[in-house]
Length: 87
Image 1 (cartoon, rainbow, N blue to C red):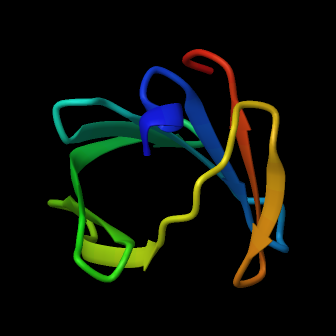
Image 2: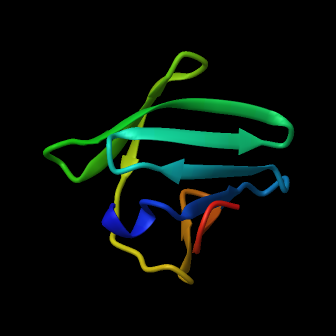
C-alpha cells in the first residue's frame, strides 16, 4: 500500500462510473464518485486484503496487490489505475 500513499487509485466499472481514492499513511482515505465525496479508514488484514470503512458503505474488503504508479490492471470487472498525486 506504500505506493498508494499520496497518489490516486482510479476505479472504473463497466458502466463508466469512476471512483477516485487517495490513501493516506495514517490509515485514512478520501474519495470521490462524480461530485460526491466520501472518506473513511483503511486497514490491511492478515489475509492481504485492504478493508475500507466509511459511514456511507460500511466495510468493504478487497485483495491488495502491489502496484506502482502508472500501472493499470483489472479486478473483478473493474479497471483500476494508480496515478501520481491527488487527482
